[in-house]
Length: 409
Ligand SMILES: *Cc1c(COP(=O)(O)O)cnc(C)c1O
Image 1 (cartoon, helix red, strand yellow):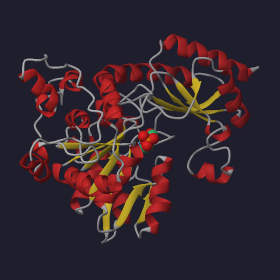
Image 2 (spheres, helix red, strand yellow):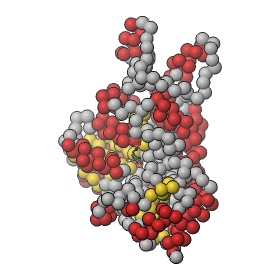
Image 3 (cartoon, helix red, strand yellow):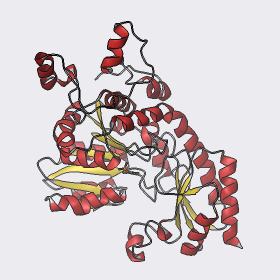
Image 4 (cartoon, helix red, strand yellow):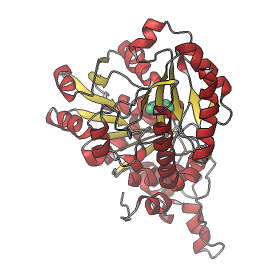
């Protein structure tokens, strides 16, 4: 797969992958003089593709480059999105999937095709943790969870049968970072596949493949689509890995993205660099505001000098993202009161939306989990997480100010 090289991320996000050779019908119509070439790639909303001759059908089966057969095996709309993602993440190839968890499952099933052991960051997205901690052990795949903020802990957990090092940076909800280049180096020296979930940072902030990582994963549900309209995921890596992931795992396990969702995601990706810049700008100002507020115990944001890994953030990230976590002085009751008082910031899970989303895990998503268990993963009583949106900063700050004010009275 060849990419034109663009100087800037925005040009790349807009133009990469929109090569008309992968849009067969559009090109045929154009060549027949019927239409111009559609600038927005069309949705090929169909499950199967017809052939005029046995020979055409036979060749599409043997060599996929020469035609599409069935949407579980590939679809032109999906392909445009994949080319764009590969370019943005500086990877050879990409595979779009039905969800972020679809991408994570397919990538792990591919890297662990012959079984093996995983060394993973101890704080992971909750469904990923469940997959590694509960589902995969039933199939004989064990995971050792380590505090990967110290790369030595990864190295010490490696066994002769370790096949995967699995990372996230920044992590949820405490926004801890891992030194991506150092972890990739450890993986390389032991011949282990390194995988990172880059959902929080996006390729605008960091391109892990350029730091030596083998496989990058995304929940495109979040920043990449940015519109809150789809559940979608992606895997980016070496062509060989992506082909194996597609032909073995994706085809047979079936976590395929629908053409419509691929198209909806394609509407979002071109504005990613513009949106991400604004998310970062808003979040930095809001994090600084929160840090000075008397109702707030502490704030975690990689762009603040108070972040314990701020130097690593400056070295590794180009923009510190839209996620902020804080602890309220008055704990559980204060968190509940805050989310009830907020008027612009919306109480919702998920992230990367144009809207500012807030969540207080102790009274909502994690209210059924005993406090001792919650605290092990850093989810304390007064912990509040924000996904800062694209509203005017002044409006978000005013909303936070009035809602935090109710905690002081
Ligand atoms: C949301 C999310 C996922 C899961 O993605 P879905 O699209 O919901 O399946 C995985 N990793 C991270 C970091 C996420 O934020």
